[in-house]
Length: 245
Ligand code: HEM
Image (cartoon, rainbow, N blue to C red; front, top):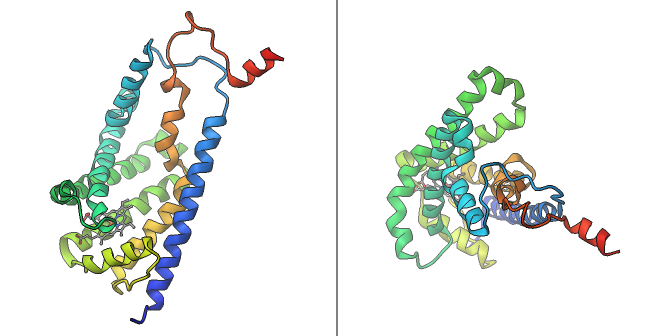
């Protein structure tokens, strides 16, 4: 079978994007891990046990509790987008696994309609950046660009899913082929190709942009610290080493 130039180009782009994403994520996470947290600064009221911290973190990840306290509108649109994204990424798993697990089959319609939540959330977040004066004042071009990129990925995906259709079997063989180093042809569909080029761009930008707040949350001392400063002396790693010498 003759492999098209388009397929080879998209395959190369995805290999590069994957390595940049993996390298960027690992190096940034190591940097976060090794950044000293010299002070006890959990945001009050804070949990006094480790189990309490796990609960606090879980609520933060699932419900975005601190965002809820600071801005109801941002919370609503942010949560809608992330919840829709979560459902739709589970739906996308079908392109990467064979056979497809039963629960991935069952989640398909939820993922498809989750895309509507994504779009509502993203349009809401972009509108907020444009119409709220103090938010517009502190927004940089990259804040807008991230949202526009995500809106374009979501709308090209929805165009395929709801209106135009696409040869999902070939898309799947292409991605399974990428993972097994056996490049297959990708359909020369302009909407699919633009969806994929934008997804690869997102993978490249992700570790070097504000989108890295996802893993960053777990390293935030104001959320991950136990409020036990009166029971246990808090010493950063470097201060411990200084004390030993
Ligand atoms: C390599 C990764 C990806 C591949 C191969 C891929 C492929 C596709 C395909 C083929 C469709 C059309 C589905 C259909 O007609 O039923 C689609 C839809 C969609 N994609 Fe992607 N996509 C990828 C990553 C992403 C990412 C990262 C996002 C979001 C940031 C995204 C958002 C969407 C949305 C919102 C839809 C419409 C809802 C749906 O059918 O799932 N995609 N994608």
